[in-house]
Image (cartoon, rainbow, N blue to C red; front, side, top):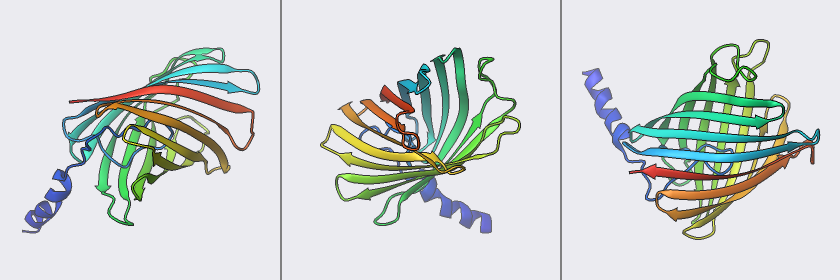
Length: 239
């Protein structure tokens, strides 16, 4: 009887729709959304990132993420990043993961999702990690009126490299919807281990309900001028 009651209690949480009318992407910016893509939806997020440091190192990174909705509140994903420059070329990052939506945004209660990734030791020799790593984070989102939204991420990464401590991180993202097609944001993010901070901002443009273009740039607040980046990208979903 207790099992039956538990199943009946969980059904609304498992079946309640998370699919939005328009695409919700983790691009641009660093914050991951507190929403899943929806059952049966395949979503891609792709970007080209240019990084320059005060030491004159210049790198390009090509990032690709695929997300698939298993049920309305649960999605699976994979990410791989290819880097060129800084005297190193090759596959820098590979992961598989899942995201589960716990709550929707209702009034002052934020939308909340939990996300986990396995950091795979399947990179080019120059970037290969020693063993399997993991990354865990909690994503939140609050609508602030009709045009503004506040998103946060809080998490920890176990890189899978020997003698490397877990890395605790945060993201604060304030988004603004300019109109039905254009959006912008400002964002502060960084590492809690040594309390460093970075800033970025950007624009997104919705071509249609299932296709979004974006661009952004940012820099290191802790050492202004020592590190900056720019990126452009595209997000799509089917059906």
